[in-house]
Image (cartoon, rainbow, N blue to C red; front, side):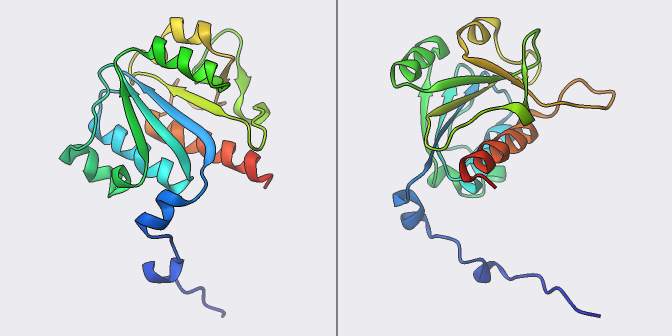
Length: 180
């Protein structure tokens, strides 16, 4: 029987922090609005690092690094991913639109695009908005979004954990950028 040896961390040939910070990023930003959990915020940073995301915006009550609870799940990714804090998501959305970002809110709404039908074109600027763990993305933000993306689900629960949701959405966006 043929074996399939697990690779050691040093065999993965990952970029060091300095090289990663200099490399070209996918033109994707993540907007976190009123995320309460420090652990969720840390998970977003780690996922953004894994998928070479350009930047994370932390809005409203979303906690900011440095904080030991964020670092617990980020495992150093707060040092590799650029981030900025905004008190007002409204002002941030206006700024992103003026920079020609397509605003995609991740939510369940009357008119959504299922994730597998999402169109993210290679090289086009995309901002994904993730909302509060209980209340989701605010209606005012949905109203300003270019599109609302929904992850199809088939169980009894009506939502995924927001940081799990980010992994699913961001992988699909990267897959589309790479045309895998």
